[in-house]
Length: 394
Ligand SMILES: *Cc1c(COP(=O)(O)O)cnc(C)c1O
Image (cartoon, rainbow, N blue to C red; front, side, top):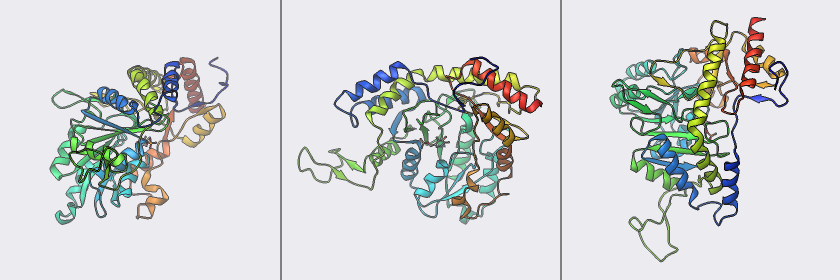
C-alpha cells in the first residue's frame, strides 16, 4: 500500500490476528467429539496461567462474566461500596451492580490516566470510621495496558481492609518493578486478590468472546469454577448424598459462563504468539512516540520501571472531534476510550454527574486511540501518522 493513497480497507483501532495454525486448531475441534466440556478449556487454562505467571487460571465466556464471578466470589452484596475508575469499559463497574453493591467512582491521575491512589486514600480517610466499613474493595484498571502500581494498591488495601480485583483486560504481559526492584507481572497473583482478562478480538488474545480469572487463592479459584458451571459439583468429598454415577448436586446459584472447546482451541494457539504480539505493539508505540515528539499531538511519557502492554495507543489533541472525523474520511477508524462511566445514563441515576471527575472529563474531551494491533503494517502506520500530522499542522 502506498503511504499517500487511501487504504482499500478501513484501518481500525484494534483487531485480531488469525493464522493458519489458529484455523487448523479450530477445525480439529469441530471434527472431534467435544465442542464444549472437552479437554481444550483446561489446556488453555494451563497455558494462560503459565503466560501470566499465576497459580490458577479459569477461562470463561467473557471478561464481563469473569468480573461477575469475581464479584460473587468476593461476596459483594447490597450496601457494599466498591471503588473504581471512570476511565474504563462499563463492565469494571457493572460487576458490582450485578451483586447489588454500590459503585464509587474516583478520579484518574492526569499523567497516567489510571485511578489516582492518592484520591482514593483521601476518600477513605475523609469517610467517618463508622461508614468506612461499607468500603469492601477496589477495582483498579490497567488502562491502555499500563499496569497500576499494584504494590502501592496492596498496601492501601491492607491498611483499609479492602480486597483488590484487578481489571487487567488491557495488560496481559505487562509488568512493573516494585520498590525492591522485583519484576511483578500483571495478574500473577502475588499482589491483587484476583485479576481478570478478556479475549474479545480487539484484545491481545482472541477467542471471539472469552475471558479469564487469574489468582493464587485456591478458595476463590474453586468458587469461581463452581459458579461458572451452574453451581454444580460432582466432587465426592462434598456431595451430601450419592445415588450413582450420574449423580451431581447444585449447592449454590451459578451460571453457564463456560468457554467452549472451539474457542479454547483458538486461545491455545493465540497465547503461544502473545509474546511476539506484545513486542510488535511496543515497536508500534515507539514509532508513534518518535513521530509525534515535538508536535501538538500529546503522548504521555511512561513512568519509570513500568512495562506497558499497549492494548491502546492514546493521544490527546485540542480538536478531537474534528480529528476523529478527518481520520474517518480517510478510512482510519480511530476510537475514543472511554466515555467516563459515571456519565452513562445508568450511573447518573445514582447521582453521578458532570463535574464529579474533572480530570477524567477533561481527558475524555481530548483523547483518541490510534490504530494499535500486531498486524498493523509499517506502511499503514506511516499513513496514519501522516494523516494525523497533516490535521494538526494545518
Ligand atoms: C474488554 C473489556 C472488558 C470486558 O470484556 P468482554 O470480554 O468484552 O466482556 C472489561 N474491562 C475492560 C477494561 C475491557 O477492556
